[in-house]
Amino acid sequence: MVFWQTIYERARKELRERGIKMREPQKIEIPAERMEIAQQIRDTRVKLGYTQEDIAKKLGVIQQYISKIENGHENISVDTLRRIADVFGKRIVIKLK
Image 1 (spheres, one colour):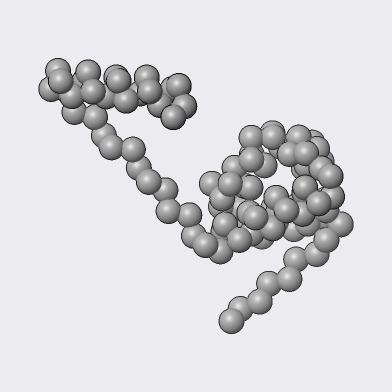
Image 2: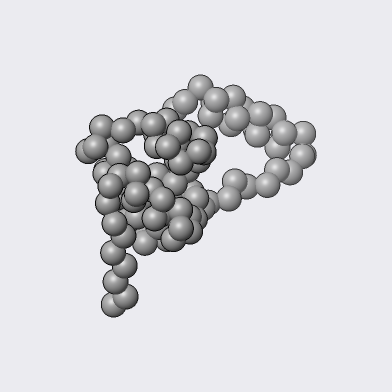
């Protein structure tokens, strides 16, 4: 368990004992298709030897945005996907089944 999780759990317990209700953390459901794209982006970046910072600089965004994309937490547009593909020297192929 990570240190901050221990502190968080301790704080939640103390608040419950005082009768203070806290919201339960929301579980984020990430669509499988988004995760597949995110994995392809990460795999391609690593295969080409780029860091997230490298890609961020080329796109004019911050590194955290690239991290969100690669973790499936950012629902990117086709335009953004095209820009990423351009940085990789790749093209996008979309198939509807």
